[in-house]
Length: 117
Length: 117
DNA sequence: GTCCATTTGTCCGTATGTATA
DNA sequence: GTATACATACGGACAAATGGA
Image (cartoon, rainbow over all chains, first blue to last red; front, top):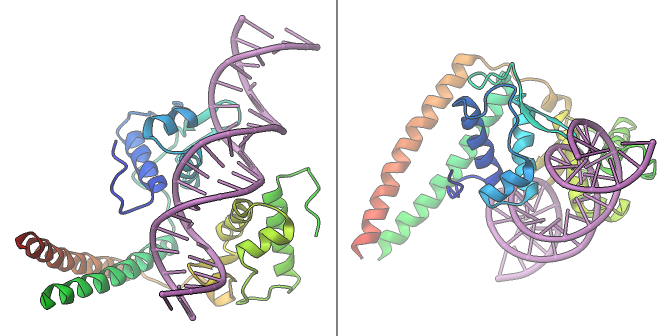
């Protein structure tokens, strides 16, 4: 797996990676994910980062964590449609719009600097 | 305020305390909460613990955090779901996609110009 | 029942990144 | 440029739940 996109925080990249793994059947419904320590070691991140990634998946109902046992893929997990509310999508679109606006400004600055040379 | 119940983790106790404060009007809608550093100092906990407490309130939609500004109690206007149609969101996504495509072309041009030097 | 290894949960202190003013 | 504030990450520590020896 890659965690060097740099476009997004490591914990989100890890969450995506795990979600993909679940979607591809690498971690079938009901199965146990590698332990947090194991995931941290594998991906070369701190345990807290793994926890943050797992929280994303928990919030979307993809996995459940059982104290003292492990983290398990929910049997009714639905990777395709992670039950998102319209308002949640709206928020994401707003965030994307804002990010894109800032990125555009940065590109404009680069273009001006480029022209001055 | 007390954080020594010991029956529940400090971050949950702090979340309860803040929720009560909001409910009692100590932090009215639209007002800004004390900064994370301030709350940590006040309640003698680490900033991470304050973050965890605030995340609870964010997840329940009670507050919103604005990067570089602060954490604010949501107003009813904030809480109420904006009436957005799915088609409107789809249109926004199409706009974003087109914007992103153009921006990508500009970055590619910048990259080529950069290599020519 | 006790001990112990494993695993998640939480907390701390610090550091760095990024947004805002 | 400086200051403030939130966001994220790291590493270490201990608590709590689980299950097997």
